[in-house]
Length: 444
Image (cartoon, rainbow, N blue to C red; front, side, top):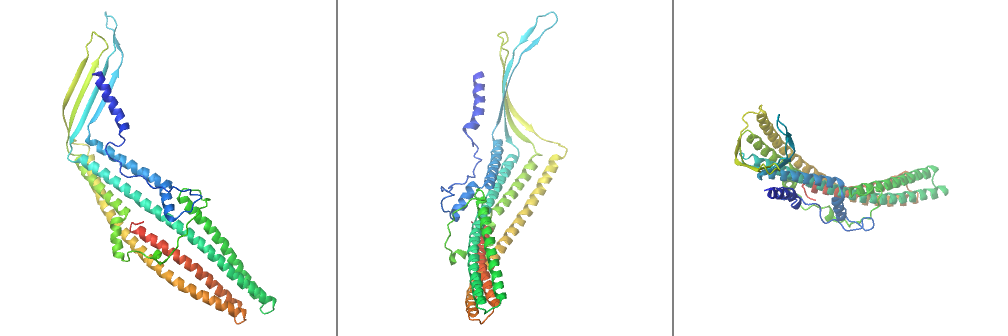
């Protein structure tokens, strides 16, 4: 008997170590396909940056661990379908002396195994498991939402860095244009063809353009640091980025029907799936709360072994088996209020689901309108740049031959600089609007 009890106890202790997921609770997989590149040496494209951020971002990793912790609670819930077995053992020394008798010492020990198995509880156990499973699905959807937000953040940081670099190139081009005007004003001032005011105004604009170059250099550094942080690198890390070739297909979306996009979002947005899972969990919690006021039926069994280490005292056994009916007839109204609380929580969750749906629809609508506006703005910025370039060429020729003043020339230069920058801003704003629209429908 001793041998069997020890073997059973050893089995109960070692089984969790041999089978880490015996109840199949863990389903969400960790990120796969991490980029096998020397990040500091090799050229990285947007896909590389996204994959690196998914595999290394500490905030996302922390949320993934939260999902695994929630999955573990599902294993706890499923364990209610299995019997519970407890083994206890005691060993001690007792002594007694009675008047007129000699001292008697006993050294008894006992071992006892008890098992209980819930057979019927009006669906409460199933409701608790369903609720836990819904919470796991909600956590997984929230993790998916965080994943999409991270991808969008990387896209934004990548495009912002490219935009900053383009703006720096544009600022340097404007600096050269202002320098050309300044040089021309100096030449004409030396020849006595213009006043000192022309030279000073041209110099002021030239130095302002130099300041713009310095500011754009700072913007490049700031944007590069923001991107490095997203892939878990220090902000002073210098990255080699692949510059893609952009064409008209880059700015277009596959589906231009906003009603269809909203319908896609209703099914694809992880925030919607998370809220629906929360509602399902609240519904299951309501059922579980109601069953707490009903009786439960369990099967019980126990086996005990007693021995006193003394040959004069034989060992003894004690075994029992039966059914246990438990009915909480009165619990100070706590079960009643618990059921009411679960009912109100379920109704609250239903309202939150409707609110989430409307927010998602509005998100798609706003993102779609922003995209359409950005597309039109980019088209207009191209036409404005062409006009500004032609206007600058004419103004410079007129200034060379003395047909216009320095104010007109510098105005044309400023308009050209603004047009260059506006085209860059409009183009990258269009790409960001497209990325936001994709995120709003749950695509990435």
